[in-house]
Length: 268
Image (cartoon, rainbow, N blue to C red; front, side, top):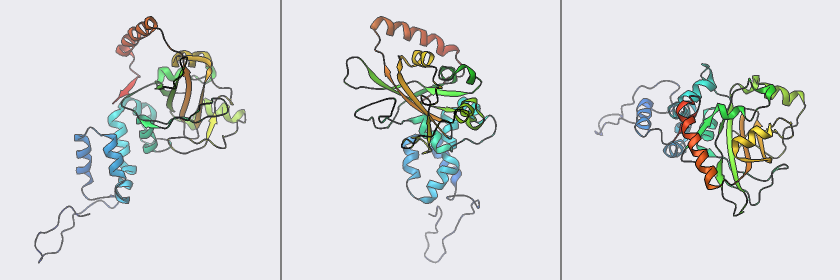
């Protein structure tokens, strides 16, 4: 693609100078366009699918820029100044904006399966993440989203599907215990964000069920989650319905927490 061609047939097309590693000419202009669009995830997905050059540019720069724009505090914590992210920026961008859905597993049956879908807004919190870590792993940093509610038609329970990401998973206590306990990687389940193989945290006996269930609003024995080799987490739970009084109390408490909880990252 050329951004500047002479209109005269007597002149050769003028090719602008571009960096050696650039996927397209004047890529800074494209970045400015996305900034004006507030890094719309749908537009970026469509752009990355146009051709190989734009796909390469998205992988090299645009996904990272989107993540930094939408969740700056969270990204600063996850990268810890290193500027790199395990599993790649595209996988992290997908995790921020996409509910991965769910299929039946050994420890959490769901029929029919729930397909993945884009979400309008998500809140990720490392305070919430502590509720999903055993006490001996509490030095790990884990961001976890609020559950995305999926209606089942069951009068008792709907399904909550949630996701998260570890900081520096290769150095984490969680990974250390998974390996020490010789937990096998799942044969048929893959991470919905990067495609890597996953460990079942139920199989690893690393789910603090009471604190995780309390955070999710589920019953103790009604949840499961997986962590992949790159530290992406995805899980599901049976949500316990709240009475109208409980719902009002919960909303009041949440309003108070949002004012002070500086490690939460909500994006649209």
